[in-house]
Length: 307
Image 1 (cartoon, rainbow, N blue to C red):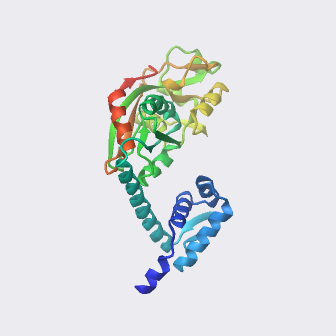
Image 2: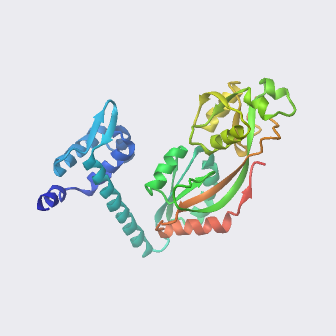
């Protein structure tokens, strides 16, 4: 027991933060960029940490970094310690009232404009607060949610694997779009069978938009044809306008400025996106996060956008 205590008492908080970032990214360079450190500095910190513990914490197989059993055990402790420090920060901020603090939010690329429009009135009411927004893929957001990295998440289809509380925000229909030069663009109405014969530009597999589209096709015994997968709506629109295929996009992403883009009429395909602000039910809110949630509920009733 004494040897175990001696092997860990030299670990610093900074080393824990560095190790947690490396373990999360499975990459020294990405961890260094997040922490505003150089890659050699991160590598040295991990080596020193392994020396302190007396066991290897990471190993590289091929080009992929993996945690050892000791690394997994240390990562679990890092999560607990960093989470407790975060709670301490929130407790100390509570003594200051809603005068300082940061609200951390995350969403997918499609939802960023919906969140940003809420920032101005909130920051006008609480000028001492800061807002941090992370934009990533559905898979990345779900991992951040599991690690409790943010206060709030804006989803169009919240995950069901974690106990979440949600606040409905905005409804937005999903539209099938094509280039104005696409053969189907000349048709007044289309069927799902027509769409199944065309090539599609799809989001990543974890995308809720893609999952809904695939579910509809599967329910009708049809398969989506696709040879292009993109994770950004702007890139998808550009590819559609280049006549590389059809795509399904939120209506609010389509504007009159999108030249050479047309919305197809498909009576069988009426999909509605429901954006929801989500947070973990076990989340311990800071005064800043609580103020954001209260204002969101008061000033952001469920809306229909892009209809």
